[in-house]
Length: 203
Image 1 (cartoon, rainbow, N blue to C red):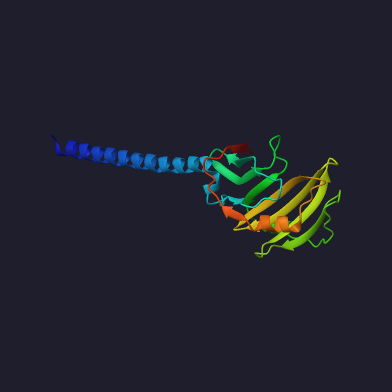
Image 2: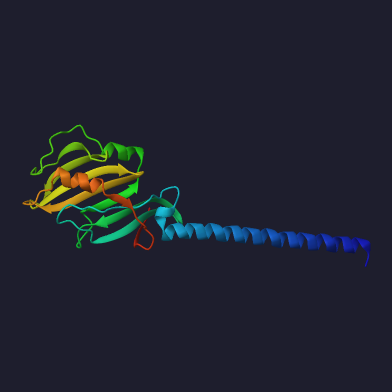
């Protein structure tokens, strides 16, 4: 075989092997990338950019119980998560009154404070106050009445980097006390969020 032909064959084989190696590396890297993205889709709170450690209270006010739990995520593109949240529901017919959790941001801090001092557990329109729990956790406590029959207690609080918005529905004749809300705030513990149903919203 002429030397020039052997050289061309050698160059072709080297180029072919190099090309196959590059493609294999690309496919392997892409596979890891897709696996990581789909894992975040399955467990959105594990996404380091928008995820957080889910929390759950161990002490609920009298007559209140958690009936359901779910996670949520917003997609701005396939496999691209814009934000995530977790919900713990207090009713079976809807998700109006629940615990809503998300990764805390600067705007959320403003939701946990108030200069109002007119909190009234019998008020029809919103009344609020600022409180600090026995363990030193600051929260905003508000009250109003929905539909003339549901006494609503709203609590805004940040713990462990998690913004927690709570709306308790109670009977008008069974008001909550600040001792109830203090004990509730101080009872949050980390929980495992994997395996919960996921509500997906594409933007």
